[in-house]
Length: 125
Image (cartoon, rainbow, N blue to C red):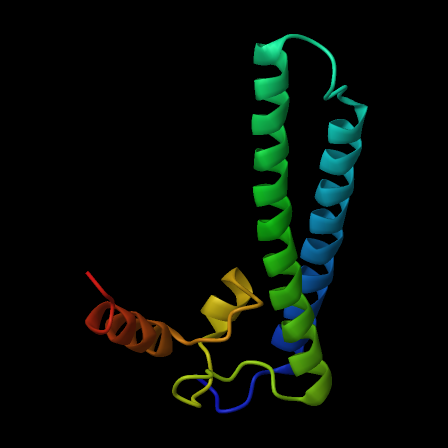
């Protein structure tokens, strides 16, 4: 592994991040529009319960999308700042294959294992 990521890898990751961002924004917009079309105040108790469950599902989905968008934006800002591809835990360069698979990752495999080890060690039963 080289000590500095190639511009090609960075460019590929940036394109993937922008594509992922657009896909997530489209998915959020579509699900909001579909949900808005549902009449939540009509029907019997079962229909209203189903509408409530659908709303809860939408809110959970929107939260996951929001978190992913945040991670993508942070990765894009790291690219802009020239700090992309370095593990927050170890400071070492993140593996190129890992960046290509998960371009918004902030941890190398070693860093992820270290964090997981620490979180399981200090987790409350």
